[in-house]
Length: 222
Length: 222
Image (cartoon, rainbow over all chains, first blue to last red; front, side, top):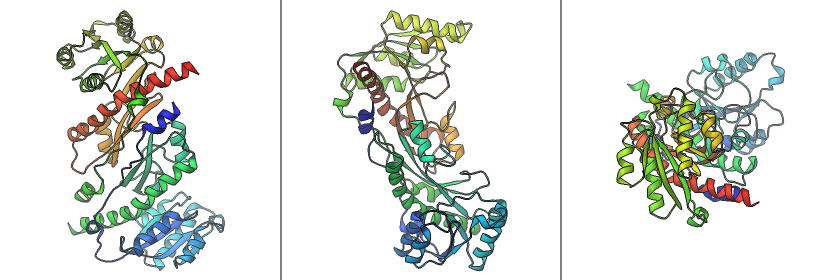
């Protein structure tokens, strides 16, 4: 079955293509980024900003793990990075309170969860209603929660992908902004599949941020 | 949001591309088709056979609804069609026993559920172990059960599709053979989306049948 499967899927992908006009914003968005890992999605947003694809600035990035590689990345990209070590907070709510306080100091308008491995609480969601954006490495509603890529491989689906959505209290739920589909190849490992999904994440994440901001402003106008 | 979303998805699709060599079978498969509706998937299989894309024959088609349009389609395509009206059977098992009996009379090897709206029982699955193939209009495991297209539209996903899989007792489960991804457009109705999904169903269904048969024969050889 395997080597049949290998050729059974085209390498083509579905990925949203937004015109620069559609992503045009009247003034730069102020993004507060939350990251726990290496920060490749964070860098893709910085690159979109630098390439003029996303009219935004990132006054501050918050990371929760002293060893997170995103710290070095932020330094290299000249983005202010602040450590809020979750281990130093009694409750999730306390961490979120510190996050909100920090973001407000920096006039953050949109909270971008770029690989944020902490569960958000009402403290953050109520401080930024419908302004917290999350990315998940599956075609939601399939494969919510951790190890989504391993879940997809185990279930033997032939197509998976990634989803950018407005965060809600229920993990990996909330209104979907954009999705991209990624074929699973017969010889995929979690690593090879993750790499192909990440390529799509880096395309749709900045687009979804602009889309959310533009949609929200259009709603305000009407 | 809507007209943004409209352009947010490319019209491109993921659909498996199998080479004729990969689909080549040493002898024709004998397919028994089960259909409840208009039979467009049934016709796509007949066309694949007539075009030499699928080495198979359909000795018999069974439909369960006297008014099903598939009857006329079978007549036009010169495929023997037999009505087994589920209303005339006390239990699901009784219907499945009649199906198995009919298929065995015609030396059917593979059971193809081409829009079969009856729940299959162990009677059929045990008579044709791992040889019952179903198609479902979603990217399983999302949106199992009835009205899958309406489910997808209601959930506001941006990408859905179709799945061909080996049938199991659990509805819309069982090993996946092939999938195709279909973008949801901002102005899609259940009808317009269904039409685009069907185009993909007609591509992957005949391919999945050949794939299953070939994989099964390879397993026998090894």
